[in-house]
Image (cartoon, rainbow, N blue to C red; front, side, top):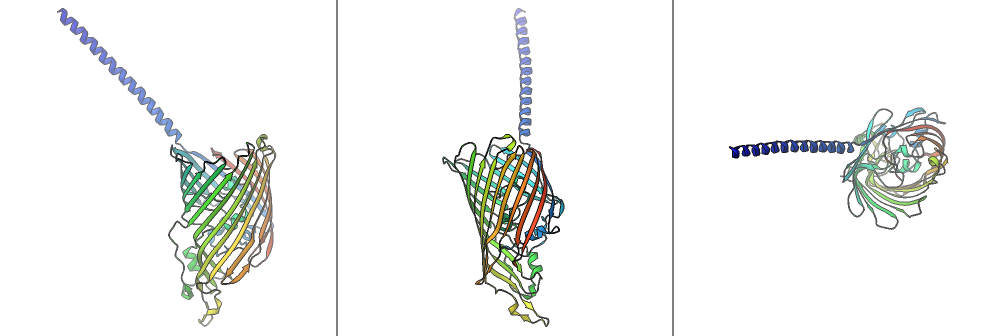
Length: 461
């Protein structure tokens, strides 16, 4: 009996210990699950992208009854071609304009990638994908790879969105040689930060070559058919080559000048494997003087930037100067030509300007010089002189044609109410030459607002 009582007590103790162990284990598991759940929620919150919305608008007045944008579009140059409706959709009207609003989302995807997406919405509500890319974070030896759609890193201003500019409009060198939005395309970029005692960044890009405004632009097939009468046409329209059709290489160097000074020099080269133009001398379609050209382009650019940080209150005393020079060359052949037809329906062979296979070459340059100074806390004064066409020549089958240059001077005063809000007034005076050699004096005044809603990353150098 004594043995039985002792065994019962031991059994009860063992049972109580087992129940206690189970309870403690369950409690620990619940605590771990709670902690894991919190960690998962915390991790999930870390992956929520930073979102910002850029709002932009302006009031514009010019001395050409609202036609200043048309004169800017028709500046004489070797890239002049037949326009379609898309070419003029960004033109500013006299009066109030809603600029491009931008919706930006960016995040650290994981320890290996960063991601960013930028949608632009114009004043008519049309949406365009400007950027959508991933970039590596942990590659060795200073290497980085970016993939997707992005602004090219050639030049200095090309990779900057319009809301970060010191002026309300694009400079003449970029707009005439690259387009209002610069070079932006889908492809792959590889950069290498060299292990040197000074900053040295080397990069290459291979891009598809789609939907370019100027450099590497391809003519829409429908526009070809609308302009040249195929029943009275010599040759045939060139097919688009398989991509990628654009390649770039760039280098940026910056010596160590201390904490207050920064100097950067950049050199860039770009090549468009295919470039197309559709020419129409008198502006009347399907009357025999139209030409379709196909070839390639090359662009060489150099830039230098100096910045001085005065450590003054809200930017007072800060100074920045930017100089960029771009030179464009093209080598093309006539691949299709309209054939003039008289009233009797007979072919008039001497009315089309160039024979099929004729070579057309050209070169054009442009530059932009601008400086900004913090004249008071939150106030910035900016001056700009930009020009295109000091070199502006065509050679058509051995016949040389020279165009006049165009230039402009601008002054802008910007007030930064905060890092999220900016108000600006700008005045510009331009001498714009068209292909006939006529020079128009075009004056413009801008009143602009730019506001950023939500988180936004630091601006690029």
